[in-house]
Image (cartoon, rainbow, N blue to C red; front, side):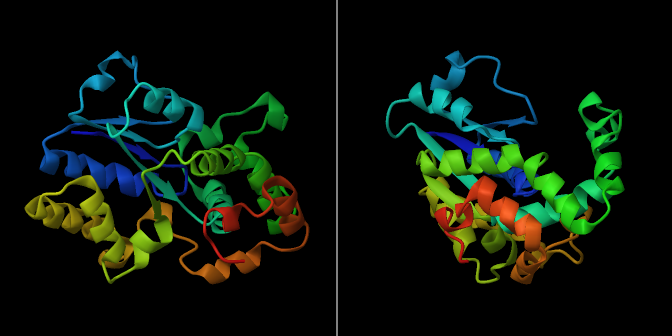
Amino acid sequence: MSIIIVACHHKAGSSYAKKCFSEVASILGRDYHFFGFGELPGTYTQLHLANQILCFSHARYDHLEAIVSRLRGGQCKLVHFIRDPRTLIVSATKYHINSDEHWLSIPKTVYGGKSYQQYIKDLPCYSDQMIFEMSHGSLGALQQMGGIHTRNLATITIKLEEISWDRSGLVHQQLSEHLTDESAMQRSIKSVFLKYSLFSLQAPPKHARTMLSPAVREHLKGNALQLYRELYGSLHSTLGYED
């Protein structure tokens, strides 16, 4: 039995994965451990115990490499959730302007005594807000997303856009089959993934209030688009998204 590691990123499926895999763990009869920002397993010595699911909301490729290197081939199934970087930036900008997450309201010297949210709100235009977001709040998430992908650490990569909006259930089935060979468990797991997909909900949750259409990429233009290219190049293409 393989350890299941779920690698997520801020504004790229972490809330969805947290809900789903806590239930998937029960179906598979595994221990479930969720690690938020800056949280890591206290020790890697217990990782030989395969009966667990480790879910990281802010996954780092160096941490995952350290875990995977301690496991022999075939002992780890690493599920990586990704999102179109351009859409993530636009979504994160709007989210950080309006969210009530505590860290957003903490004054920081680096922002001249303002909080992250105060600083981004005070910028004169939406383009400047996106520029600030992509070079600060989303910078780490996108660097880590690209690092995990280019290092081929994942045994399956899941696009948030597909698992959130593909009503065919194809990607939900693929992920279920990846996690277990038992058909009865596959059906139960697939039902969990479908239940929390956005198209199954009467209304998208607060954290997913924006950016449901690929057309949102059009918001990233001018100076913001230029900076995106300088910082990230063609990361979206590397991750399998069209220009």
